[in-house]
Figure 1 (cartoon, chains in turn brown, purple):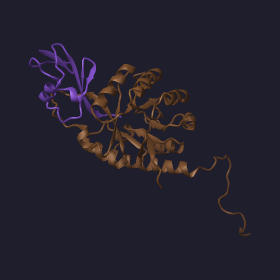
Figure 2 (cartoon, one colour):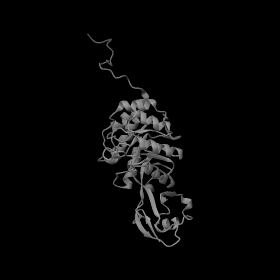
Figure 3 (tube, helix red, strand yellow):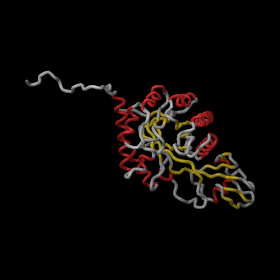
Figure 4 (spheres, helix red, strand yellow):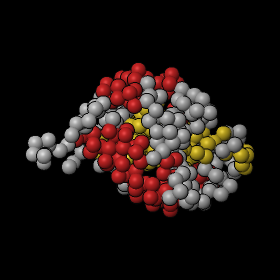
Length: 257
Length: 66
């Protein structure tokens, strides 16, 4: 069954986007990405270590003909810093797709929504395809969609928390109203959380810590791939209504007396 | 002349360009980006972009992140 994720005018067969942080090595990062079946991977933008510039580089392990690189603005607390980071990322030659995150609070890592909207407006005008990390707030998602973001990425729960989807009803409203892909970004802990996101009708899931922080990241990456696939199929198949009481599966006719 | 590269002072020969700095750091083959005094320098302009005493340069690349 052909069921591509259409994002920023491009088709992807995988609905699992993975981060590249917190791994023990670049080799392990690559093995996890392959086990996840991911085609889009997020990376962070940081200063080159100029005292040891010859050090191995992450992109040596991620050929650009195989992976779509999604630079993030992680760590940015102002619209200005996020815009600056995106401009640098684009100049480094990995394309115009960016994950915009402007952090509003260092403890919860919840996004600064007004600053995110402000940065998105500038970046869209400059030709970026913006994927904004945002609270699971339908109004904020609508604003970001209306100003031209290529997707909206509401959080399931705080970054790295592993709490899973804390507000499935908001996500359903966001899915219902959105004409751009809805990508659940952050908060997934286990495979069932990923499946739930897709079952709710979200188009994709983005995760890092749930895989990289697992005891066996490669096995967890595979679990996430299967969960995303299962969740998507479950959504497309159309679920039965949830009911309070039982409804027998076996016929009552022909029972022995 | 003295410039600041990623917050660290660095001595460069007079009339050095961004291309010279990138070459001195052996970063030519890397996917990097350079900012000179807060403005991105396109790769095609490295050779034509002269550096001056007191310039602040940022050189970035990609690292693991979520």
